[in-house]
Length: 106
Image (tube, rainbow, N blue to C red):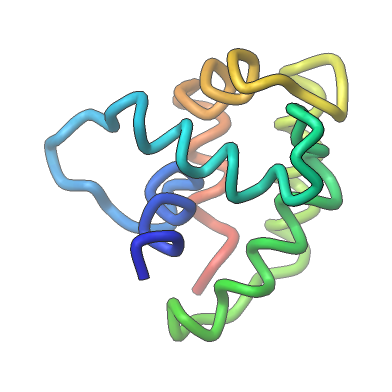
């Protein structure tokens, strides 16, 4: 559950209330996504894979069109598909990116 919470907060699937997300949330989510431990997260495959694993835990479904849009806009924002922890944290703090991910689950 803690894993799902870290991921869902970072992807904005879960409303965190008024509390700004701590760097720890981003670190936790980054390492959960970085399944192979190479220090990079692939924005297309790693995030999509983890999100699909979480859907049951979150008791929701994935909007495939919204997911494709969110991935595309996130990759576009980074200018790369594989990102380090620093880039990952910066991009997921971006309001536009967060708004895109909010639409992914329903």
